[in-house]
Amino acid sequence: MVFGKIEYLNLLPFHVFMKRFTKSSQQSMSMHYKRGVPAKINEKFLSHRVDAAFISSISAKKYRHVNLGIIAKKEVLSVLVVPDVKNEADIESASSNALAKILNIKGKVLIGDKALKHYLQKKPYIDLAAQWNARYKLPFVFALLCYHKDQHLYKNIEKQFLKQKIKIPQYLLTSASLRTEISKKDILNYLSYISYDLDHKAKKGLSLFYKSVKN
Image (cartoon, rainbow, N blue to C red; front, top):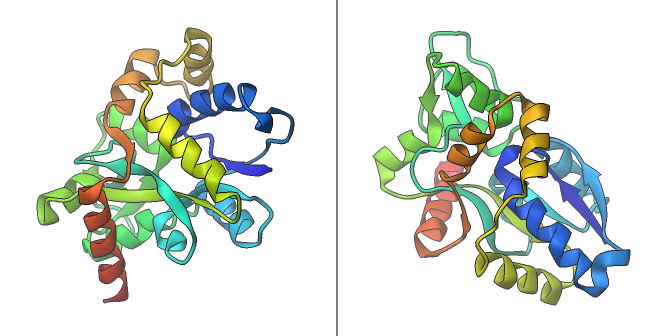
């Protein structure tokens, strides 16, 4: 089993869960990881070089997925547009670039940990998820956990992950902080803005996003 692993902070709780899940299941000997930014993981999933991954929602529409995603109920802090600069897409992203176009927000798109650092430095920014929520009063779904096979396994992952409150061990939090140069306090605060449950309102937001992309 090959899983596409995105190293952004927003998936840190899920990676902690998966480490425990694979140790306590028959998958422990067969789970391998391919690492990369969202756009690269999208490519690997679409070409079947990984069996499952969190795939940008704009690319995930045609693929099977469970009710897990990377979701912002309101603001997200890590998907931003830097205003008053030349329009520029983020090559690591897919859904975020499309979202900026839908909202007609001009500037440079930033996603992931570098966007969070920009926010924490109190530089000018526009939070795309906050703008989406202000306009439509719905969450924005940035990615979905998609899979090619083994539906039962991923439904079990969904069930087990959503019923647990994930506590990140201090050594992993310290490692993430050193890697990103973001304080542990700021990481934990940021994670409070992220939801993983693709509930009814999130599905409505996702459906509206797909319709907006078409238009």
